[in-house]
Image (cartoon, rainbow over all chains, first blue to last red; front, top):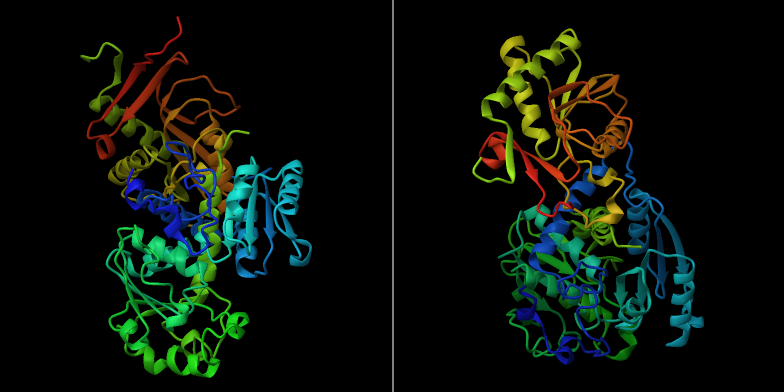
Length: 338
Length: 184
């Protein structure tokens, strides 16, 4: 497998090196059990997810939007951070496949680290969860859970580290529109440093052969060597005009307003003036360039409302595709013994 | 056949004649082609259904609509095996009140057909569903029987029946394969 080629030294992989050994998602030569990050996906596996996603979209367009594939299985969503679309998309995906869903919203105040997380997990185990979809503010938390549980764990976002299902739905959406990912020029714009969406998308886009430019204020871009050890080449720039030049896809990130007090950029107004995607700026990209945003959007901050609702925006398509991609992933993880 | 573990049951001419007879039987039983829809089960049911469509077109001068069905999401053994990559399900016409002619290559336990019946009924309410198979090898595990059979072949559970079709395998034949790991 080509996995070894892209295997990074674990320390260089993320700014939060709390992530334990790779390959937990799919121990070598065995079937995939978990979806924790895209770093253990091969091109073939991503292509397979795309193919299954197309069929899942067909299921969702039928008069009866339901198949019995996961009947009798239980999916638990365990969210330590807020979410609308990811959690709802997983619940709809599970229901469309005939599974039952239970939603556990862990209030962040009751959660410290270590024991309480493990206790929660053991409870879910005892209740017979087959799939645990988990979002946690700490990078690596889903890996700890995956080692503890017999169930399949799907990472729905862990700290700054990864959000693999978002990246897969973004990749699928690009592929659906443009027919390919290889050679497509993608500008990822915004708070790259704090963004798990950017990190997972970068991994997926590199794997699939896209041409990527990361763009944001210097304080919100990861250091130039943050992917050291990986055979990747991508560009970094502080200038939006440069990033937009020739872009086929512009992927905007949410400006994480809660981090604004940290002094990482002078003022929101300045950010808007320099980095907000307006119609005038969009005109600098390739004609018909696609605009994506993982949501939730801060309209008027990273994206102008006219662009968000414009003809080039794929934002609603992303949400719709999110359900089908998650159905494909749940299907991929099905068929485990026990 | 050169391979001693394989025995040819049907050659290309046999398959051609069987398909022609099946086409006539379908039209005769339904007194025409009105309201018929052919649905091929993937993988080899699809080219077989297309051949039936061609034959019927030759002698009735009418083209029966043709669809394809992947029943993977309806199988009862999804939890026992690695999930297969999905293939397209597309039926170009509404099957409501139509007579669906389900086409498969080999009828064995009947479980695939059970899944196909569920899948079809989720897509609409056909007036009737009839089943065509090129080979019926017996060993049914469910109360399912075919309406039209190309050839009945008594088999043992240790044997394998392989249908090879020009469109997919480059050759038209049906062979009986002795499993290498047959218990004595």
